[in-house]
Amino acid sequence: MSIIKNLDFFPYPFKDDMYRYSNNSLPLEPPISIQLTPSYCEEIKLKRELLTEHPKRCFQSRPHAMRGQWEIVHMILEHLVSEYPNHFSLEKNGENWTFHNHILSEKQSFVSGDHTTLPFEPLDFIGRHVQEDLILMMERDGDLFLDAGQLCFPANWSLAFNVGMSFKEIHRPIPGFKEEGLDDRIVRFLMRMEAGEPWSRRNWSLMAGSRLDTSLETFDVWGKGRNEVTKENVGELVHLRVEVQKLFRLPRSNSILFTIHTHLLPLRTFVENKEWRRQFFELLKELPDQIAEYKGLSQYRQTVLEYLKSR
Ligand code: HEM
Image (cartoon, rainbow, N blue to C red; front, side, top):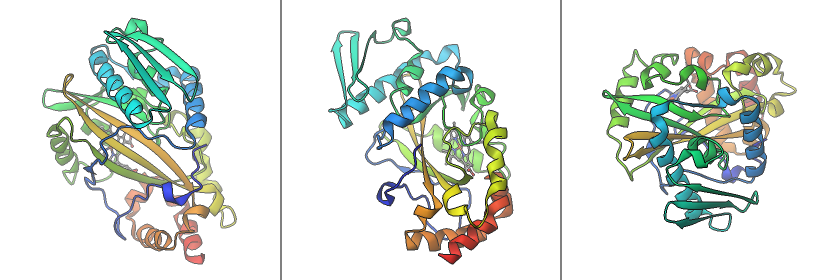
């Protein structure tokens, strides 16, 4: 499981002592779509198991998304090879390409642009080599639609349910998002995004447990953990869940790649940083009820606050 033990690597998500929904995207530096962490092998194994056992839950695509899928494959291959040349390599002979994953001792030859030469659809293939979940949002009629995705570690949402939806439809469950015009502003921001100028943001929540695969479809299995938090187990059971999300404009298919890299940190480890502990206490105490409710932490918010205070 992707539990981070070293605080130095944890993507701390908070800027202020108060949290409200906003467009908190920042220019991505360096402009790279993927990151390998020490739990690479463990997470890739889990991803592939989930894809085998629940293919429809973890991968969806619409027929017109093939071009965008290939554009993602090309970008991620380029990033893997440039960032981790000891772990990945790519041989090109015209359109005949061979990709090597040296960590897993795997090799795949294929014809670039011809999906019939791959064992899976292009996005499903490349997603099996990276820890990120990958979502393709295609632009048409002045809007963005979720037209393909590989999603193994969702924070309580369903790819099978959301496929084909527009950005605003996807974000409808979020309290205040539409009412405050945030959805309009974010769509406008996304439509203005340009190739070569990617963005990044961090999303956070708390969760009772350390599962990465918290899909909506399995809520009955993991959701009950929320009622099991006590002052004795809170430090071990409750985790801060942070998603590092990245956005890339794909110029050829006129679409956007949205990547999600999920990190989990047990509260017990989180509280070792005094400033984080102080800031999170203030923020959680002040968090509006409707956001706490949406994030699913209302049941144990008080227990977490008491724990943070007692440290
Ligand atoms: C363009 C690709 C994006 C996709 C596919 C996407 C997808 C999602 C999904 C599926 C949810 C969960 C909705 C539910 O409860 O069913 C969500 C939540 C959310 N999204 Fe996005 N999103 C995208 C981009 C963004 C951007 C650019 C922002 C802000 C700048 C944003 C802000 C949020 C916020 C604030 C939440 C609520 C999260 C929470 O409270 O834990 N999203 N998004």
